[in-house]
Length: 402
Ligand SMILES: Cc1ncc(COP(=O)(O)O)c(C=O)c1O
Image 1 (spheres, rainbow, N blue to C red):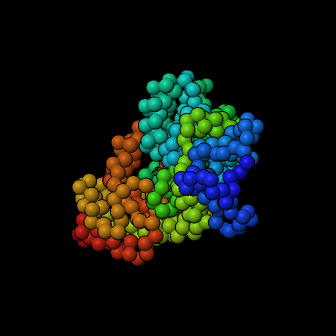
Image 2: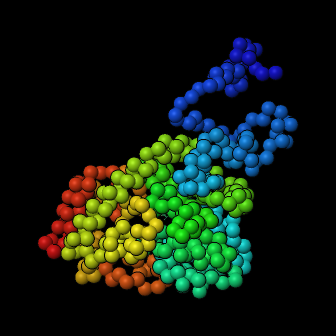
Image 3: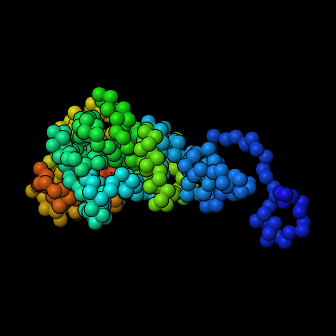
């Protein structure tokens, strides 16, 4: 028997918890409602027994989905051109979910040498400890990947472009080589964000099996939350990931899902603005005598520019430059320290422009062609003329009239 609104036999403490008022149904707005719950209430034991946590036609427990997380999953799947998405607490957790769901002792995973570092560390440490082998491959050499895939290879990671050094690979070629050998491919699609290219419709009709993103970056755009997604088209592959997701308990909080639902409608506009600003600044830096090379996939002469052209219709607001080798690391650090608007810090895609100097030699298993210090810029939403003036004054302070 439902408790009535007018039930006065309950103490206030109880009545405020078991309140009988139900707002009228039929409320419509463009903004989705936000639901926050760990426990889902069943109407009776038959309803509890009838529930299948895997099905999206009802609710079982907060970890398995709420209207809020289901809504966000569906929107991310649409963004990525996939059919199913799973949400996890960070981009790195999305990488880990793919690894843990698909790899078993005795298997091997192949990872681009220029991939996001912590994913490589996961392979070097936890995966290796569980008897899962890994090898790093040169993502700019499709034949090298073909030669590296062995009988134990179960998963090939892809990343476009590579972290920090920004090489854009022949994604379709890498996927084809893995597909022909029956090996699952997983793309770190954080840079593309579902905007720059469609990971499930690559040139030549190729498609990755899995696309993961750090939603932390462009889909959020606020620099104020951490979340990751794993998107697939194949039902069986999705279920494999979903079972691992359930057993690991990597759910996301409704407050963060709410922030993302609010950010997604402006994603394409933000991405385009950051793309345009980054290209202007990269172009300007490319003319400076202090800079030996610009590493931006959409910049002619940058590694993999032709593959970017063949694959993408946009680029993220992220690029690196290689300083001339005549400058010592301390001098480049002085340039970074002299910047006012660019803040020193990791991550990208938020409103504040960011900068980090890297010594890339120590980040790769093979020597890199860059003798000078590499500095990566993430472009925020500041006016591009202010960012340009900031770069100019910092270059002058660190290098004088070079
Ligand atoms: C390419 C790439 N993938 C994944 C991640 C991990 O994302 P998160 O910070 O949400 O764990 C990052 C973070 O910098 C990244 O740059």
